Structure formats: structure tokens, C-alpha cells
Image 1: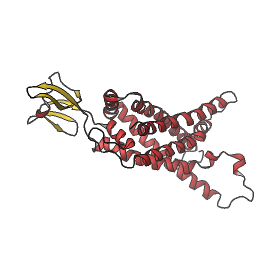
Image 2 (image 1 turned 60 degrees about the vertical axis):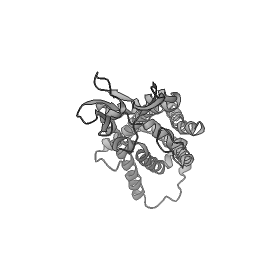
Image 3 (image 1 turned 30 degrees about the vertical axis):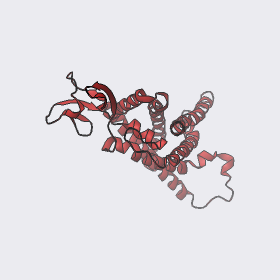
Image 4 (image 1 turned 180 degrees about the vertical axis):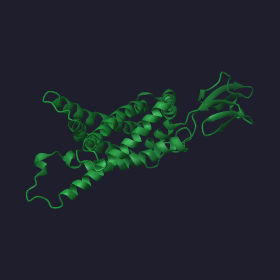
Length: 288
């Protein structure tokens, strides 16, 4: 890390790779807490809670700023790591006569560049499947069925679940039109009465279960998606196994009392966090 290929300052070279890595660890924890709602909250209540969480993550200004920082951190961490590997290869074009890396470094440490590249590919595909649809369209809106007793007997009506903007009650669904993907207006007017949620919950459940959910078509390759997601989390675990403790060493935090604690915590983190991520699609598929 001390020979980073992106920044020119030797101090910046050493610190930025470590800092972006640790920041991304914090991002993983926050992302995991939100995603666990997919298995801990079920039914319409769970769907509502997750879509409200997704709405908050998309619209809150502080979260937006943190998101951009996250994107930059991912790109910096990945590009810097790849260029660093290339730079180190060029520095030693001819291997030493005796080079027993296995005796000096762990397998995850020797494979950091490869593991990081696989994770980068996973992030790109993951963002295409969910993030891009959330931000640029492709998701259905959150609706629910309202059962009513009318003159013609029991009837069902599709109603939008909304984030209300005004005290005025929302008219019947037939009188509502959607503008700008999530904004609800009284039909034929410029009166905006509410915003509805994008149904990310149903998109995730349909993707990993293979079932049609609330109008969202199920993924025919759901089992493959679950397997690839689980393998990606295994790769993430290997990457964190070495990277977590290594980041603290790069920052100069190395003490005979605290370093063993950091290493133990890092190993626990590298196992528990990827496992928790992986169990979500597995349970969705099993309980479909």
C-alpha cells in the first residue's frame, strides 16, 4: 500500500488506500443493516419498511453525499489496487531464484488484486440489477390491494402506498396520474398530492426467488443468481481477511497490545459480514 500508483505523495500513497478500504467496511455494515429487513420483516409490513428505507436512501441529502463518497472510494480503491499490482510486477520483472511467498504471506494476501477484481465485477453487476433500476427507472411502484364493500358486492382496488406531501386526502386511484416516476398528481391538473415508493422490495424478492411478485416478473435464473451472489460474498470474505488488519498497519496503528485485537476483530468481521449478506438471498430462495 505504501507504493500506491495513483497519488504522488508518499504519505498519501500509504494512507488513502487504507482509509478508503476502512470506509467501505463501514458502508458494508450500513448496507447490511438495511438489507436484513428483507428477512427479518415479512409480508406487507416488511415490503413497506424496505421500500421506505430505499426511498430514504435515495432522497436524503446526507445519504446522497455519502453515496458519492462511496462510489469514489470504490473506484479509487479498485484502480489504485490494480495499478499497484502492475507497478510491483514491473519493479521485479525477474523472480528471485528462491521465492517462497507461501511461507511469508497468507493466501488472501497474495491474491488481493484478483479478489478485488472479482468484487469489482460483482459490484458492477449488482448495481445494474438494482441500483440502476432504482435511480433510472425499471421498477414498478408500490401498490397494495384495498378490499371494499360496494353496491356490487366485495371489490378490490389497487392503491398506491405513498409518502404524503399534503394534508389533503389522496383521491381515488382512478383520479391519480404518475409523473416523474414517483410523483402523484390529481389527473388533469398540476396538483401534486404525494410521492409513492418504488417497489425495490418486490424486485429483490423476484430476482432471488424466481417468483412473480406484485407484478414484477421472477428471474428464471434465480438459483444461478443466488449461487453467484454467495460465491461473491465468499470472495469478499477472503479479501477482508487480509485487508482489514492490513489497513490499520498502513495507518501506523501497530501495537503489541492492540494489534492482536484488531486482527481478531478483522477476521470475525471478514466472516460474519459476508455470511450475513450471503444468507439473505439463500433464505429468499428457500422460502419462495
